[in-house]
Image (cartoon, rainbow, N blue to C red; front, side, top):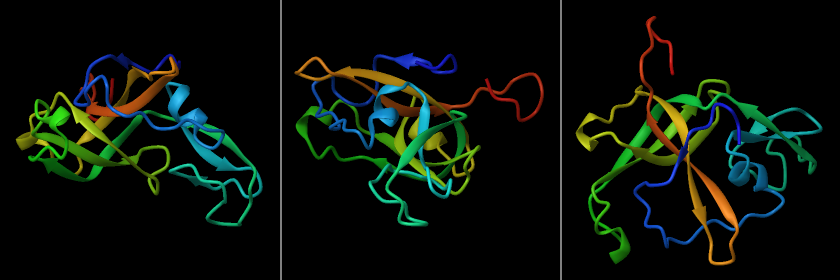
Length: 159
């Protein structure tokens, strides 16, 4: 896991919630503990979510580029109604669409943790944190989540 990553063990999702299927295309995203976005080996374009074909050139060979785990809320929604009884204890919660500082054209979706829903705002600085979840097969997934960025000594500095 990256030195910048903070590992969380609790979030809005129940511990027995279905986990994403990890495969060769998304493995870096779900197991590295870093924001490892997909980078086309042919043209260098970054894309998220990870896919099998480059959106820019049609290339099919990729690497991963780790970007800073920071961004701003581009958009959000507040979930007030649980669509599954296992989420009853989690509502209301905010799901955010984050524009990454190191790749502003990329958008990443995730839960916003530890922020009252009435305080969520477009433009709010956020940082990534990872929730460690273990599947029934013992596979570990590090699920990226978001939390409000704490301000440092100087204006705009994130911790």
